[in-house]
Amino acid sequence: MSSIFVAYGRPPAFRIRVALMPFILIEIIIFLLTAAPMTPAGWRAQEVAYAKLFITVGVPANEAIALSFLFKLAVIAVALPGGALFASLCAGCPTSGRTHRA
Image (tube, rainbow, N blue to C red; front, side):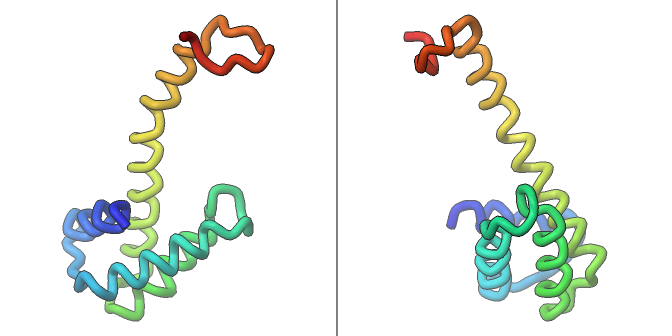
């Protein structure tokens, strides 16, 4: 649920106004659709869902797709430092099942 409220901060960056409740419902549907293993990491499925669902609340499809890409970039930006930290902790670990240094 917290990711939905974080996602709600994206539309004002594009000067898009969407009421909170329709936004929450649309995001829940999109999260469920992208969780299904249809495409790698939900690419294409998420963009189509954004375009089709946000048009129902008056957001043009191209702006909805831009919101989708902005969300994916934000997820990548947040995940990269964690991945770097994990890689640095596991550097030099033997592959015998040990996953991190003590």
